[in-house]
Image 1 (tube, rainbow, N blue to C red):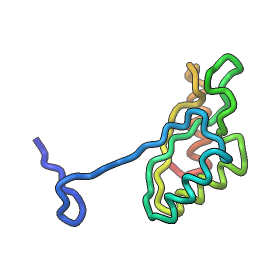
Image 2: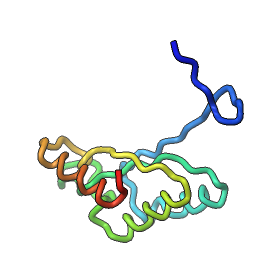
Image 3: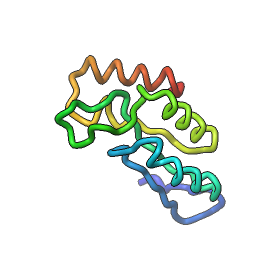
Length: 110
């Protein structure tokens, strides 16, 4: 078994990952602005495309919302990690997933 080595000789790490379900810029911005002030970067998940109208996640912001994307880029510049949470909040066919991953990469570089 490989032993993990944490920065500054710490013996453990703590991580927070924010699930993008129901996330809109209006809802998340006050919280993330405070996390920026505290220098407490976390992981933020994103969807590429809106959910269909039958999804309980309908209405969440996605990579289709310019202001949301710009804010996510700002968060990245502050050390926050962005993570893929799927093409949409539902079941997606391979082509939609591939297209969504390319969109994610075009915005964030990975």
